[in-house]
Image (tube, rainbow, N blue to C red; front, side):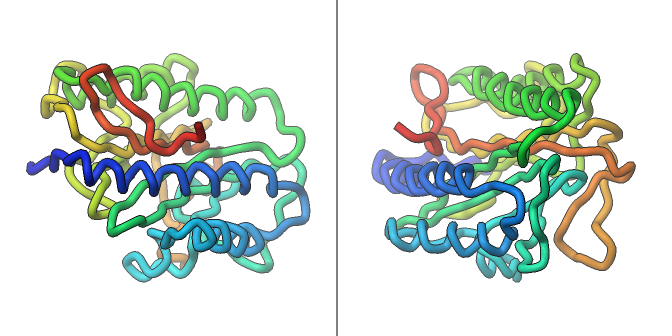
Length: 252
């Protein structure tokens, strides 16, 4: 497993890409409301990214047809924006977005409610985001990859939720997906040792019910929970430094 250590020059490009990701996601959060379509969100994201000098990472990636992924309720990841898919009160939506600057990627995601949602679903969102932050806390020089994975799993499962196992976090940089794969479950003190300059995209996907997944109908992209339970997805791109992890995809 060759985990690429990034130079300061490479990190500078990734930080630029991360700022575009953070700005676009912040604008999309403000845009989410009942009766907007997921295609409207995709068009908005495309404009923001291009206005800031970036290129969408996802458009055309392995044939993906859109700029962002929009996954609603039981949809976990890779939902395709659609002009006929209107958000409605009580939905939750995950928006996943990547940006390229000077051939380097940054990648992040959030899940939020559309209006009011039941207490269990609000808890799901809180726990999934907390699981991401717990994983980031363990992303320290000298720790092992399994420490991140275990921290995410522990936070989800202690709250009686499950973590998706078929899809994982990943290295990120010159490519959208690089080594290592980063499961959201695992054993502490196992796996590769984390080193300064490693860049990782941590992305817990947390479900109300089973962790098992399937593809939606005949759609070759959209992944849904096998039991129809709701799913929340949060992601940040980070770099390991001398003093813990620095989040690249966060607004100043």
